[in-house]
Length: 285
Image 1 (cartoon, rainbow, N blue to C red):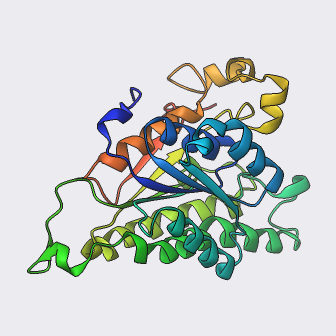
Image 2 (cartoon, rainbow, N blue to C red):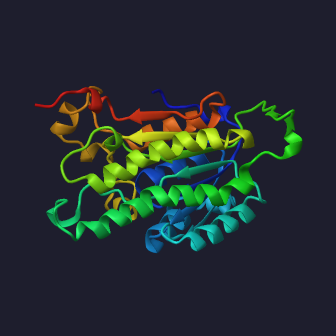
């Protein structure tokens, strides 16, 4: 996918959960560079402070970005922070990107499903990767939906792309390695959530889609990466080339390109876009 020309997209008010590092940080930065305003949620206070006040200082000085510590496993905290974001945006939220979640795909310390201790980890995956996107979306709906006055005979007359919710899933929803039951199941659940939300929120004029990343190199999108001068190229291995028909590993901006497209794709809803360099299509010995 060619980089999306953000100038074609009208300025939007965007919430990005898990936006302090990795894919979320790249999303936040590229959204801001494309002219949007962004509110970032994250649980890592140190990383969030660095991203907001240092990495994105230019946009913060322009009052285009703000952030809050948010515990995605606490529904009351979610609702409180969504209200804060809505206030920053003058009570209008155009786009929600549910990116926050547990990124480690395997059980901790080499455990497998047989170990009873994995049950607690299972709950954490489901709570953070599946329940949280539902809860954040639910809290945002009152600030996103079209008013009754925007509809005629029950049909919304929308000239532009309208508000949308984008879940960040994973290609692991379609294909799993061993010991990924918690991660893979939570990401597969996001697909069902997205499908249902796209239909349920249609009368409110809200589109819902999902972007499923493959293996994305993200070490440079962090405070430590900034301090060490880490770059994307330096993370690439020979295996990364061999595993992908695109002959390279993924970049965070590859995911941002897909998100920027979906924000302005007014005739696209209920869809999942896998951005994995073709890895799912390649048979491994």
